Image (cartoon, rainbow, N blue to C red; front, side, top):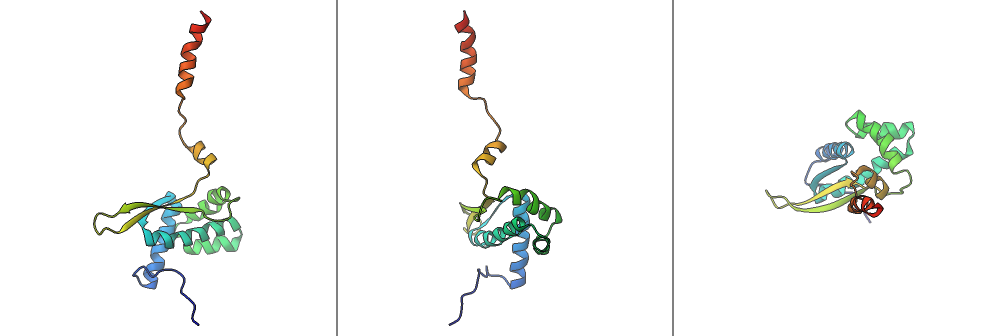
Length: 146
C-alpha cells in the first residue's frame, strides 16, 4: 500500500513552492510575524518549527543546514542566537496561527503566523504604565500628614 505525501502542493510547481517557503521562513525569522493565507501558514509552520529545532541543536552541521535553507545570513545568526535561547526549554510548538478573516480581492481565508512568546518575556517587552492606585496614594499621603 502506498504512503501519503507530506505537505500540500499549494497549486505550484515544486521549485516555486520551495522558493516561496524559503522566502517566507526568512521573512518570519526577520519580522517574527507575517500575514498569509491559511494553507501557506500551515505549511510554513512545519518548516519554521524545523528551523528552530536546528537552531536549538546548535552544531556546525545544523548551522549549515539552516544556512542552505534561509536566504539571509543575518537571520541564520538570529536563529542560532536569540531564538535558540528563547526556546531552549520548549519542546515544540514555537509558532501559532491566528485566523484574521478573509482577503478583500478573492475572499481567501487569511491568517497571522507568529512566534510564541512566554508571558514573562511579553511583559518585559511591553511598555510599563503607572497604575492609577499609585497616583491616588501619592495624592492622599500629604493630606494624611496634616
